[in-house]
Length: 215
Image (cartoon, rainbow, N blue to C red; front, side):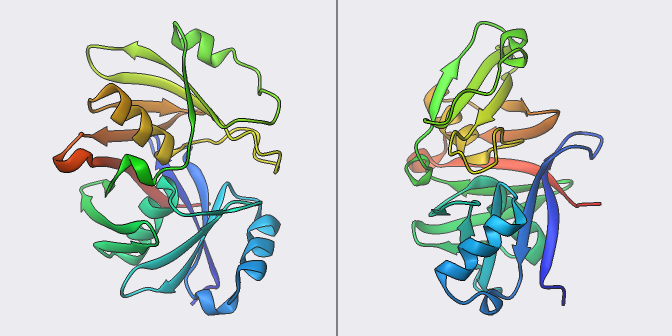
């Protein structure tokens, strides 16, 4: 077994783009939070997930500079890689499913870390944005086709940890879906695609995307 699998999550329709994810299948290789944080910083991906129990789907998620209780693209990637239907997090159980080329998770908006959702008048305005100074986590978005639920978005973590722009952000798409109250088809970053569904029972949201092994 490889210590590390590297995936692209939320790939575009042609399989390109997507957000890089590191998956450490055996969390015992980095048994404590300090060593996990150091390894995530060394890898430099927007998120790295450590698998503490592959059968129960118990996971631990880190950015290069902090631990996260919930994040979208690590859960999509891990559920695809491990081929499991339930992921155990501190916030609660996340249900996962595979549907053709898409992997899906179901989650609650209150699990997601806080994001500033900033709407712009057009996709061109979003495309033209410069990376803002570190500070708040900004999800910049605009309608490409409101009737069809098509959104153009870019994500700026603002943490000052080397990830100036996040290529695809499931948690932010989750929050945007909850705010707008409808399913979305999001093009983020250079061409990554995030699908969402809901809100469903008790406000749950589905997040879906394609996953590939990174080249």
